[in-house]
Every structure is written in C-alpha cells, then in structure tokens.
Amino acid sequence: MHDPGPAFRGLHVPGAPFVLANPWDAGSARVLAALGAQAIGTSSAAHAFTLGLPDGARITRDDALQHASDLVAATRLPVSADLENGYGDSPDEVAETVRLACQAGVAGLSIEDILLPDSAAYPFDEAVERIRAAVAAARALPRDLVLFARADGVMTGAYDVDEGIRRLQAFEAAGADGLYLPMPPGMADLSRICASVTAPVNALAAGNFTHASLQDFAAAGVARVSLGSALASATHRTLVDAARALFDRGDFTPLGQVIEGDEVDDLLMRGARG
Image (cartoon, rainbow, N blue to C red; front, side, top):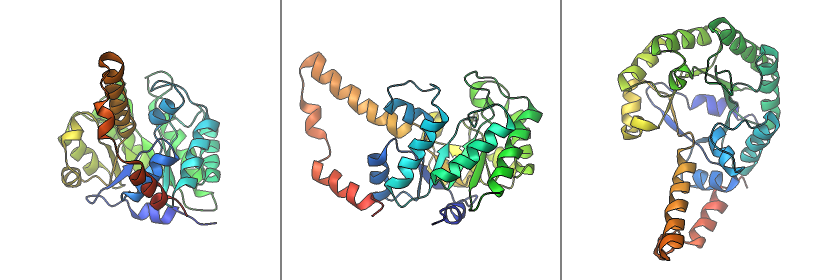
C-alpha cells in the first residue's frame, strides 16, 4: 500500500510554511488539487455544513472517518484528518481513533484537548496522557502517520497563552509530531509559540490572521497554515449573496459572474486521483 506519510511529513518545515487547504467534499478537493494544493485537510465545521449541521455539531467518529476516506480517494494529495478530541475521553478511545484513521488512509491527523461538546479543556495531566496514547498508537502502525496535538483552550477561553504553551511543550515531550494552538491573540504570540517548541507548528488563517501573508507566517516560524472552514464559508457567502439577490430583488445578475462549467470540469479532471 502507498504510504503518503513521509511526503506529508516532509512538507512541514518551520519558517517555510505550506498551505493545508481544507475542502468539504471530493469536488472541492479536486479543484484545490488542480490549483496547486500540496496537501488537504478535513474540517469538522466544513463537513458539518455539508450535512446540514452547524459548526460545533457532534459528528460521529464513523462519519468523520468516512469523510476523510472520501477525500483520500478523491485526489493524489496527502490528507490530514481533523478528529476533534479523538471521539472519546479516555486515552484508549483516542488510540483507537488513531488506528481507525490509519485504516481510512490519511497521512496525518490532529487531536485537541477540549472536552467536547463543552468548551472546557481536559485537565493538564489528562490532556498529556491522551496525546501520549495517540502517539503510542501511531508509532505501532504499519505506516507513517503525522500526529498534530492541539491546545484549543486559548480559542475557547479555557486558558491563556502561557498555559497553552505549557501544554504544547508537554505534547511535544509526549511525542507529538506537530503542534497547534489556534487563534492566539496576535502574531507576536504566534512567534512566541513557535520559539517555545522545536516541532512544526500549524497556524490558522482566520480572524485577524487573514490579514497576514504567508511570508508573515514564515517569519513567525510557522511550518503549516490551515484554513479551517474558511473556504466552505466563502462559498456560503457567495450562495447567500446570490440567493438574496434572487429572492429579495428578483436580480439574476450574480449568476452571470460564476465560473464557467467547462473550467470546473477541467479542474475536476486535473485534480482527480487518476
């Protein structure tokens, strides 16, 4: 079986970040592949949108893994799976999720430290033990799997940046391949996060960070910039604006500004796995 892990691992260079594009279905994955994406990642929020569910809805582990498998089959690109909190509180449940993710064919995955569906974080020791179990499961697999450990408590308000850094350092010591603290207050904090660890750091292009360039992220020491649900939300912005013009004003002009079907067809063919 082809192992996408080594190529995916090789993309993660601190100070020379790549963009981890986040599609929401096979078609968007193929378009992104055709347009130059080097790797793609699932987004729990974008996936929820496709199911008619809001961001934060609890998707089952089976559904999340099937979605990841669909994206793996769609293109030649490595796929990283957003697996939320590992779909279980216990270290054993997290380890089982890692094993199942390998079977789904992904090249990488991320596990966060939030006690979903709440916004509270797992206690420090418990959070570290969960990552330690995930790492042990990943190392026992028959192929490479790049595991990112997430400290999401700054984003949810559960703890501050100092605590987030403490957690990232502990996750790295537990063996995590990469680290991710979404939405620190600013670029200076992101630089401090990158300087506090040696493993590759993922940054999220959202909020104020959408005003930063890839060069800004590179200067901060970031190795990977993910997009989360931003691309899916952008398509919904277009959908909402066009629908409001249609239904509120009887205005069809937004439909004259769309991409031509032949161009979409070409991108889908070029981005396919083949």
